[in-house]
Amino acid sequence: MSAIVALTAQNTLGVSAIHEVPPEFAQAQIDMVLDDIGADAAKTGMLFSAPLIEAVASALAPRRLPLVVDPVMVASSGSRLLREDAVKTLITALFPLATVVTPNLPEAQALTGLRTEDRAVLAEGLAAMGAPAVLVTGGHGAHPEDHLFDGSPT
Image 1 (tube, rainbow, N blue to C red):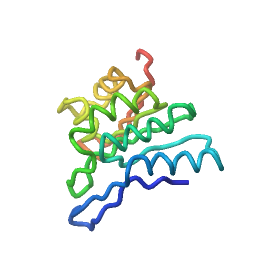
Image 2: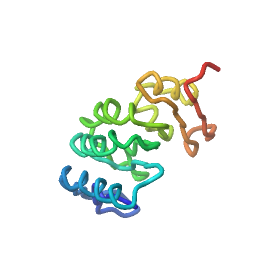
Image 3: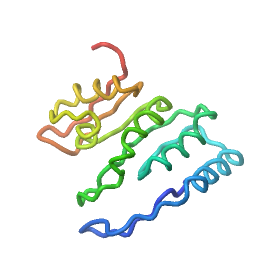
Image 4: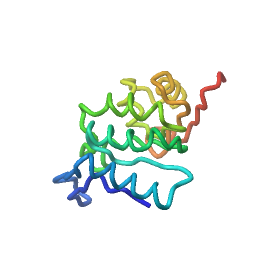
């Protein structure tokens, strides 16, 4: 099941517009699905704004579901999909609820402020920000490999 929190007008060249649903409506969608069908786990995607992130966190926090937080920040075309003023809310509201956070390399770099391609360093930096486990996904950089850090010393 899905809760639609934002719509994009986009093509292969970029995103021309983003329309977010009202945060209370996003939370109502999540509540309705989970109250009826339930879920064994949840995963976030593009959340776009701080109020949407707060609504999603409010809906998920009391349910204690395993949660994958995918911090979708930038489209492959380069268009921003997470407002800059929402990054702190993503970290403070959703990282503590997450089972694992799954940024790609550019997202991990943006979240940590580190320019390194060393996924181990990035993953540990994200864990220090409150993520219990981090999977920095491949597909970018000179050595596009996944790196999982589960919070345990190596």
